[in-house]
Length: 335
View 1 (cartoon, rainbow, N blue to C red):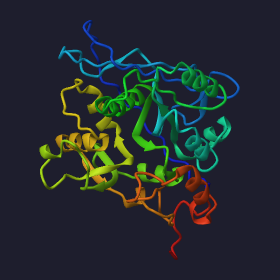
View 2: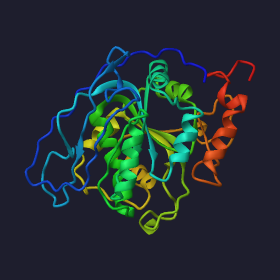
View 3: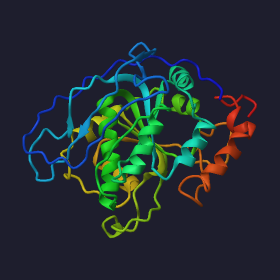
């Protein structure tokens, strides 16, 4: 993968003050740790942009379903936040080991040193996000794998319902915010082909608006609660990849849980919330290209699949194409 020019450093933001409530009902718990093959202490991005080693961190996301006042952020624990330009959470699952293997064999480094170099060259911290299961055999296997890979490990203690599926992504943004002081927080699925070097340049662009919601925007959706949305759907980003700026995530963290309506689809929910906030929508078709191009950032089989069709095979095929894996970060002037 071509390396990107080193990006400028960003100043850390001040976290909003929070108040804790004694009447919180804990429905969701995210345990987040970084692991590598040699020890339980991960390389993490420091304020100076160099890798440092810190112990694994844990953060909890709590849900106030009874309407109690708790300051709204839903986070507990004083965790030191690490400075990065962008945090990318790759959403994965227990049945997606083949997809993770395909990612590590293509655009995502498979070893801690390679991941560290990627973070230093792009300013992006890229980690896997996975939900908890009551299946002890699966959890034991996951814990075993964690000892041989670098992973951001999110444990989400909820049943796999439509409602909790949407809450999972809100919990992801809250947990990522608690651990990383980032200019952008990116949600990505594990079945897209990504160019981190180009993504970093997109996120690093100068913007006059501090609240930004960027993705490949659409109006078409399949939503069980579509009768509430009207015949003309609002613009919102496709679910496989989108990004929220730090100021937007700060507002989401401050929301009192269950104060906003949650739709069945997470991308629709986030898009609806963005309408209620003073955010700037950025539409980037480079985040949803069906084939590699000189400017493509994310490639997936739109509109046939919500990601790559047969991603374990397709990911490897794309990586063998020079225009996908070896083309320059920026297109040449002749193109």
